[in-house]
Image (cartoon, rainbow, N blue to C red):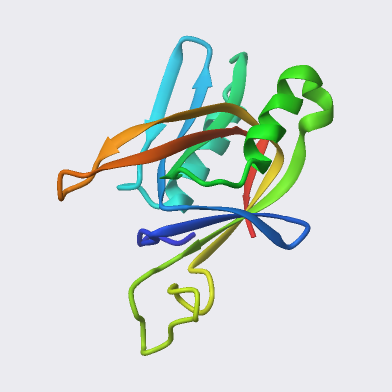
Length: 164
């Protein structure tokens, strides 16, 4: 098992190999078991978070709610995630999809940078089994320069997270 944290600054969500959304931040991974809850942020490596989620899921007699991943990004004109959330509210079973999440670095590593402004290949890949958008939100955030930026937050609920 990998013991060093994976540093990433961009997260892409892919369906059938096509990127449908890119996020600037992964706020964390959350899993609840009955009355016990544990939240892991970016300070913990993905492998450690996945291991903890698997151990929590195996706890005997615990009632389990789906793990969630919460992403943020500047507000996008692309409405696919909002429409998917609407479908999930109307037909929950029909909204679940297997996704892939790729994590990239935005800084130059070994002189290799893709035209999209991120490392040429992902630093980590994950399979999100039976994922659906459980929450979407829009709001404003103040940037370091004092300007206001429209942001959106998407929470994906998943049945299982696998390292790909």
